[in-house]
Length: 347
Ligand SMILES: [Zn+2]
Image (cartoon, rainbow, N blue to C red; front, side, top):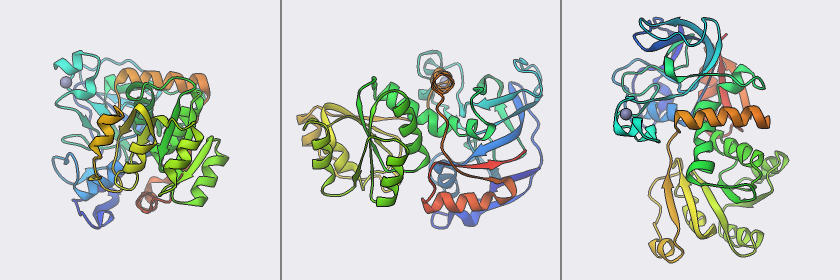
């Protein structure tokens, strides 16, 4: 089968370790299902894998990709056949042990054996076929195309948990999303608008700020020295309830100063550096909360799918290319110039 896979890691030139070529189609083991991939979306996680950062694959070559929507193709032995072969499904991308205290409690993302597809022993989804735990399959909302559905498991689930679980935002609340246009930030933007939140988006780029306004966000601010006073002016001097932070060093100090007393920064990435000054005095003086967030639970994925179906939210796709041209999509992901998700089409 055709697949986009990592041959190893390179911290400086990650794409030098990307190959698109033939690999053997996988056979599903017990508890797993083989999907005939329809569409798979790219994530920064794939670039981190190629750079050798994070949870390393157990071996190379390793098929990349965490996100997939496709057709049920074949069940492993003794696996409950919950969906007939041929059914179109979307896959929850988080794999957990299913039996530890975290898995039996309300938040299985705290499982000590938490892994994403492509991590540890698991192969990814950027291929004609991929293996998914059978319990991770969900019905695709009718309102979505298969390429839109493929955008949900990582970026949209991460944004959902950041806004509504970690950030505990309610309709009418105010959120600042740091960095405009990326897969996660456009996901947060769309879900926040659908939930009746007031949405502020920051970017260095005038072009990206203008595009965000055209997508319907309420306000944009230029990152830099003026950002905080602008945000305070837009919020009656109070600051925002929650900041969605995935940029890191370039925006951290603005994130801390843009928050209302008792507000929360929810962090799910540090693409521009992970070691900003902590400014602890501001953290305790204003009783700010800093909350890490990572993907989401199966229950949150179900809630996200229900919200998408009820609200009509559709993931923003920058572009979709055939699997054979996955390299072009990776170049665009690395450039940071994509607006929305990059998708690879397989069938
Ligand atoms: Zn567990």
